[in-house]
Length: 238
Image (cartoon, rainbow, N blue to C red):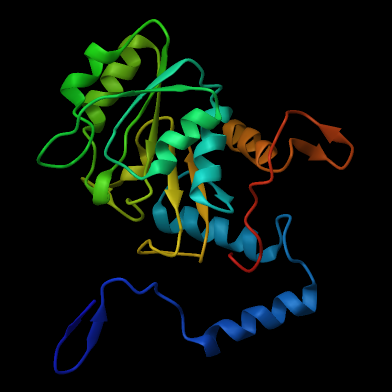
């Protein structure tokens, strides 16, 4: 599907790709260094560039957004039940189920398609450990109200921000809300790395834990500090 004008053609469903001639020199550097993954130079540069561009304290890169969601829940040791939205891509709920967590669905608002913050409190039970809202289509969730509820009941607030790359609210990054925000850089997103994702967090200690978890729990070549997965972003994506 496309929309045509006299001067340009704007594609609505075609993933963005950089001009190939601009991409080839980066590939040449990868071939020269033979660093393909495991936190190579492009990974480090990209993580820092994203942190600065988004205006957030810490960014943890991932191979895709689903692995980032799964790891975010692990990083905050979420268990039991999590309140979330039924109006989202399947990965939001799948990440809960893969962690052995029961999703508790609360209806959405008609005006934003986001989780209805006024129905959340009634869904909280003794087993509730977190709220997992989605900034649907980049529309900001009711962050102030959701944070108030999370603080009142002592539960975590994790945002699925797959649609919210670069979105600001009152001059502040939307990714600053909650305990963690999870991004997707899938090919279908406005900003993509073919596949990819990230977790935005607010302190260095939590970033270190996330970085351990996404790399098999390795603290160094001989020390494993936690059961982890392989969620790392490779140099080609970065």
